[in-house]
Image (cartoon, rainbow, N blue to C red; front, side):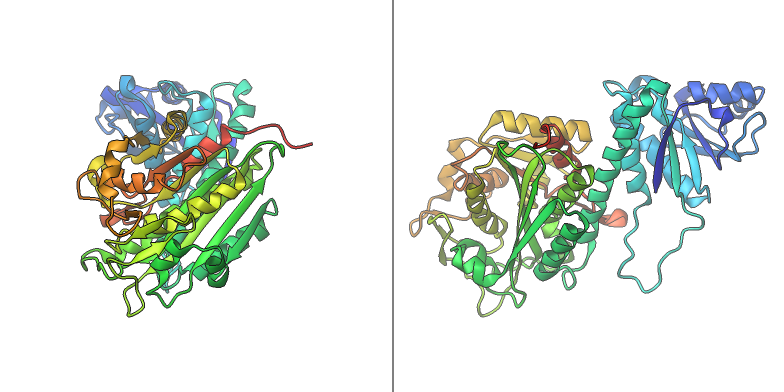
Length: 500
């Protein structure tokens, strides 16, 4: 979809459709009032009849409104004016774009971006309108023999800003939003692909394609022999039972000064998780194709920063493999040696994400990073703790955790910090190795983070457990593309002047 920024009165827009808001209790927004005046009170008349109450997300499409130059006028409900915040703004934009895409309005001018949102400037509204619009029209039909065609889909959306002085910042915000949306689309596509297509090998090939599309991104793909030479015994223990060979994928993006130490993103890339010998129940096991959504978010974030030519230095590490049962599979009770030299007693082979991340986190040391953030669909306990609203943040540096939570708030990709106290470490004790890969049931997300913390002593580190937010279930089943918005927003706050 194409996005443009414009400032002007709604009744003067030549377009297939102009979108204006109505607040709850039938209160017209300023843009709706301007159309109402131009139409000699036609909008007020519609409102008085009760056809539009202004409930959040409600829509009413009007044709041939007198006094305007647009073919149609779309009224969208904004809810209560005093409660018009982030969620309400995004909901209104989503409702409008969905209807536009379904009714043949191939282009439109939207004035919801002029409405004041508490604590948010014009640039925020423009950026989020772009992200939400792209989310609303996203479709995954790559695996279907017949594609569902949308009649005259929405191809161009003009976002209105209050003043001409907002045009420059609005255009920059639209570019940010579009890059984030493209990154989310890539992450969603990878997550939605079935496990027999999106294998570790496939992820390696897609990474190389990104490097071709964006020359600023360098990609290296390591295969089993090279992984063995690195001594990644923890990672390799997970892939033992699978026919599919593992891949260790390295993204490198350097656009800041050479003295700027890189930020490292580490993604869990289990392309299918059966649980291994500790086999999962059959119900909903198909969801385990989403167990590589942490890796997918690294792919999407690097695509976003490369599109924006962000002035940052960043490294992405993806450990990709399957976790399958077979005669060669790792067994409960086995002891493996990680790349760090620490030994691990594997009490549960379904706690495999932390095993591949352990070696990737050790590999990250070679970059002498400014900070390391790993992203993983790590624990079902995270879903119990925070549901499907926020991801969990654990960190050995509170300032880093606060920065990630703040970026998530700005990106409406929310996160919440949980404790990482030493008291939780005791459950990982083992009689036969340096420590075990699981503790008891209580505080499962925290003890999983405690396990990872044993491989992050040499740098500032944060762990994002995205198990509750990486995909949706039911009618909306599919990958969400989170936390690409959070990660991209956080990286953009660290931009520096370009290297000379």
